[in-house]
Image 1 (cartoon, rainbow, N blue to C red):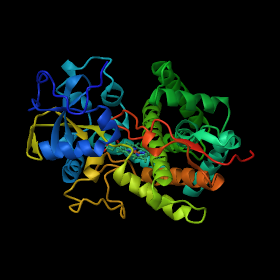
Image 2 (image 1 turned 90 degrees about the vertical axis):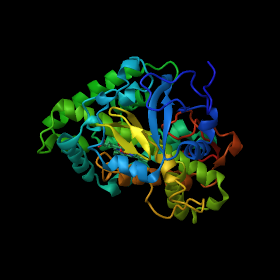
Image 3 (image 1 turned 30 degrees about the vertical axis):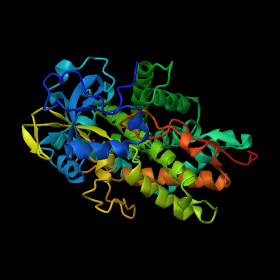
Image 4 (image 1 turned 60 degrees about the vertical axis):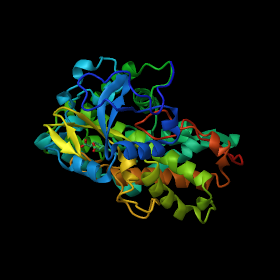
Length: 421
Ligand code: HEM
């Protein structure tokens, strides 16, 4: 099948189209390599809110403007999270590729109003109990174990063997799984398959096993609570049921693992390819923080997030939005909005980016801080243990994943002087 390309116009306007005759298909190889150019072109041609087509030519709005994303995310009464109000369901096949992200589930992600405050409140309090120093120490131990597996060979592919593995192990452990052992490894493997299936994997079966294992985890913590996220959710006075806790644990693990992994990888890419970040053991630490922040502005992991659904007819960025329309939060585009950076230069000095979104459903405090501990420890430990680490390929040959949702590399091959384990 040929790739739909950057600006391929649809043959006919999609059914129920909200002014989508000139809509742009999201995706394509060019998009994959240089999404910022696509956002610029979209903004030039369509303004802050662009009509787009998702997989299968399903119409949606891509919100590109910083103020418009802030407006959507801070007005839940107009732009809400429950996807069941989508006016396109009649056109969406059951095996639609985006179904795992938009198909309604009774988790914190799709709840609204008072119910959302109850569920998100439990998560916030459970995450607030995580000791950030302990988390850093655990991440360092996990990092050392992962590095030991490839340190003697002098080369590694960091995406699989490090960037994805570390936050997955750290989050599963944070939720109260044993630090190691076949049982934890099985859960980590099944989560990896459910969230990011490779060819030959069976994500549905893996997702089923994840659910079963988390049911057992919740039951174990009810019987014998410990100092972990699951136990704090079980003990919380809001009185969540086992089913609610399992749903929300899956949401927490999925929401934590993929973006943190890509944050690690995108920061490593920047550190290894940009001469402004030339590494030395002594200079490394300062640069790591800067690289992590710059990535959130310029190569943010959750580049687009689906989404919000209009509660009633309304206006946004000069567009007429119909009740039930889907809005994709263009977080990467919003971060580089020329209205914010009139000089063209995107400064990375502060944290006013929208990478963790905004409003009621934003990445819940203190999740961004925990992500920072994981990412910073992952990058710093790697650079400390393998100080002469360099890219093993020409930087221009690195390829980005074809996803319009998650920004990350397909592989990050490196080499270094072998170190004895
Ligand atoms: C680089 C790392 C991370 C990024 C870029 C990120 C970004 C995001 C974004 C964009 C959302 C969607 C917000 C919305 O709907 O408006 C979100 C939601 C969420 N994130 Fe994060 N996140 C990260 C790490 C984490 C971590 C480490 C955790 C947990 C330990 C976490 C837990 C959650 C949860 C539970 C939600 C759902 C909130 C809700 O719907 O109420 N995230 N995150």
